[in-house]
Length: 430
Ligand SMILES: Nc1ncnc2c1ncn2[C@@H]1O[C@H](COP(=O)(O)OP(=O)(O)OP(=O)(O)O)[C@@H](O)[C@H]1O
Ligand SMILES: [Mg+2]
Image (cartoon, rainbow, N blue to C red; front, top):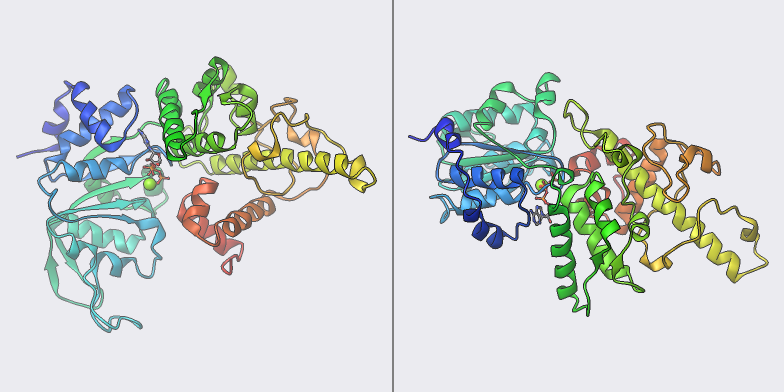
């Protein structure tokens, strides 16, 4: 019988054997931590052990459960990927475990639920840390003995489902705070797989950039793909990538489409896309993204919002400058231009949201052109952090016509966080 010990004992990783897997799933990268994650996934695939995939947002966690299912004996059976963070608390039990007709208002027919439907197959529970405690109790039971009860029923049913779960929040902290059951954590975490953050992947950052640049050039039949100057490569490797591979992909796509005058990305161009190492990173001292205790970093989300605000501010100033040139008599002519003149045409900048910055207490976000903290540069208007955040969320929702998944991706926050903030700011109508 397979146990976690037998699976993990084998330490003779054959990296060549991973090549076909990487090709099949479009996985780019050779860093040891990535290879180790893929190797563990392959080894454990042939067992029924539960797997818990951890890693920051955008690191590629979703590749692993598919790879496990496709390489398991269950591959001909059903595979479902469920995002626990996006299902409202009131319906999650019924979605996962099913319900009987009449179990609650609106339950006009019986519903099988994922655990019933996936019998013999695999369930991927993404963002498992977002499950309510009552659902965690049901999940623990089905993991222990395959038993579950539909909502509104007293009949115990059996199912044979292999569960792979993922989380980008620190479950240990959630356990400490009483939001996640410790016994469930140990049950899910039989085999842990950790996906490394992009900033720790070294040369893989450049390989991924090339892959995304090539893909987008092929997709839109561009005569030439974008490339990086040697200095830009260095910056890409030193930057902390709070949004990880998702952010790298977005930025590469934006630059591929918007750069017109040149196809070689320089440090100046990168700074237009908010890619530059912080002072600490320049010295190679600090890498932010998670707190030191590895708890989920709300600060990171804030920091990303501020980066967007930074881009925006420059855009607004560019706009002012353009307007003042176009209409010499306009009142804008005398507006202060604290930033350097644009190095790119407006259209080559990332889309950003109009607002203004007042202060930022945590320090690392600085203007790349002047290396001066914002607080000293801008005093035009003083919006609170919450107001700025609300504004950005409204803009992201409007831009994506209310599609919350897309808006959350753009803001580099989880859908669950976005839902919470929509409630918090009373934005349900958007
Ligand atoms: N090694 C890789 N090679 C190529 N593309 C990758 C790789 N890893 C991730 N990606 C791409 O990066 C993007 C983000 O990956 P994914 O959605 O799996 O992140 P995640 O870890 O699930 O993030 P979140 O916690 O926010 O859901 C996807 O478009 C994915 O295809
Ligand atoms: Mg995901």
